[in-house]
Amino acid sequence: MSDRIECLDEANAEFANLERAARWLAAADRPVAVVGRGSLRAGATAALLELCARVPRLRVASTPGAKGVFPERHPQALGVWGFSGHAAASEAVIGSDVLLIVGSRLLEQSSGDWHPRLLGPGVVRIDLEAARLMTQTDQSIALCGDARRLLTSINCCIAMGAPPAALAAGAPSGHPAIARFARAGDEDCLVKPQGLFAVLSQVAQDVPICTDAGNAMCWAIEWLVRDRPGDFQVSLDWGTMGFALPAAIGVSLARGAKPVIAVTGDGSMAMAGGDLHTAVELELPLLVVVLNDGGAGMVREGCRAWFGEDAVPSPDYRHKLNFAAYARAFGAHAEIVTSCSHFEAQLRRALERPTPTLFDVQVDPSEVPAAVRQRIKGLTPELRQFTSRTGGGMC
Image (cartoon, rainbow, N blue to C red; front, side, top):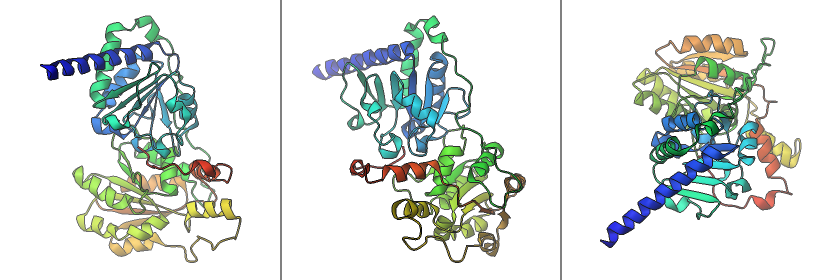
């Protein structure tokens, strides 16, 4: 009998918190949701879209590892919050009066370096694991459970109790969450990574993309547009180099040998390039995009920032790698790419090809991802005292 009473008390407490969360979201002037990979695993996209329809003022950002769990072309999308994220998302999260956090561990890269707003008033946090939830107060709400179920319940509470007039205000501006890069021209002999990801976003918008650690990951999080859950895979927590190619093989096999794109750097490809032979043997329609800048680009910028020019041995390669020749030796089709227009034309052809294609993209090494500049700034002596906190991860 006591167990039954305890269960009823817990159910009543959860319902009261769901109603409270619904009231907060419906009445907020600047509500923002940050959705993590827990939303992806729970299949919560439809519930998030319904919540946006019920609360038109709500804006939605994803953590880096959850790109696509909320469509990034949706008018209420903000892009990515956290590592390599977007200014609009950061401004909205920091300025929110109600902040809904769904299925994120809020580790360093997925929390804006543990931004204090996450501990401020008006936070509603949903997570499957109770240990991750904060202590509930009058100014915060903690909901433990499946993200899709709890969001569906919040939608029901809003439908039953929120005044329709209050929900009708605050239509989205319609500005895209991720800006389109339009400065790459055919006169360039080196490809701007921003332009390359604009091409991928347009031509391969329905093709899953797996991305390696390093600059490739930074460019992808910032400039790639994803609209479907599961269409963006990146190695979380450990930042594993050599992840993209074998991951793309696995995704292609899991989806019935459908086209999948692996985006990698020259350093990662040098580590795991042999897996291309597996894709050739399996005759998978795999596309491998190698951002070839002739060295370890992320290391290069870190060395320059910390030690100055030429203070340490150069991370650039003395012999730039020819991945097109490497791929052809395995039996794959290969193209050396020196312009975005060339890449777009060859990408369209490759998506129709039933066997692997590798693009050896000659990218401009002078282009540095915003995330790398931000990370270098965060590791300067003045801010180094704040970098001893444990925990990484982008979900």
